[in-house]
Length: 464
Image (cartoon, helix red, strand yellow):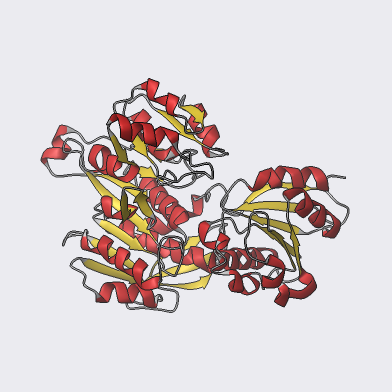
């Protein structure tokens, strides 16, 4: 929603917004754009009298314990008959498929890696001179903002049916309380990446088959001249394709396919197409998952005419996304500093691949202290608590913030024995980490929220 606000502002609209507890980097970005942030959802915001309210999916008809509405502004909108829409619908109607500025939409879907892959693909297209627009659920460090409109089509471009590319992170979560379809069905991409697919969002999906059905709804919207770029290693995605596909298909995978594959380590590898080397990626990014992200981005960019060699070479300059293995600081210690990282990982699979990526980077002898909070709706429900010990296998120590959980984190992490510690507050977690930290350690903080500003607090507490 913050990126959407930035796009609306760039398109010339006056924009305000409200939310509860907005945190960096999005809060900083919005303020820098001059977009007013209002804390909370009070009904007195009706006095702003906007032309339309764009409603995010955090908003609902929920009631508090005393019976009052959790979102008074939404109730006032409904009572007044004021105009409202969802973020994805507004985006599709006003920006993605505007008749005077048609765009080639490239949608990046998947349980994991959407933000990173969207950022990689955007950078590849930018390096190729295509000046793409984009909307990402994070802040790509190559651009410094989470969204932009991109180059505008000239009248000659429109007449020649040329379309400026627009790369969008395509989320399978539902659109709004009044539209329970996945967000991505609104985008109507010409190029769609299906990066991976496993069970998530237990608060709205009953099982994996329900999510596969939504992914197939996305496939149905891709035109015949379009391309679906799909992970060949994922059985769930192969089931999605088996339901029907009416577009070109490009398969990719690390285990080798007749499409796109890799050869080499995650930081330096050859890109293969039909068994032949067509490019090489040499960069500072870690993790096998990022090899797959890169393959998907390269295959998608090729659909727009960017050669694989050019795409792979441009990734050497890719700077990743804020909160994706982002180094927040290093505290000097005799014998080696203690480095604190920030990462968005919250699903067990994402936690495992993130820890694995750091392990590959720092080597087998360095200690990794994994600090995490099960904050997503799925993790709060405890649906995947049994997978946590598996996700943390490569960490030397694990520290869990259990505040707000309705399940027993100590019991869930008991297979790890003394390697796992649990605390009910951020301050307690910090005290545990400080007591355990040694020179040369790597402290990896993982959360899809602000985590109580733990990164800066840890750096301060660890300082000599």
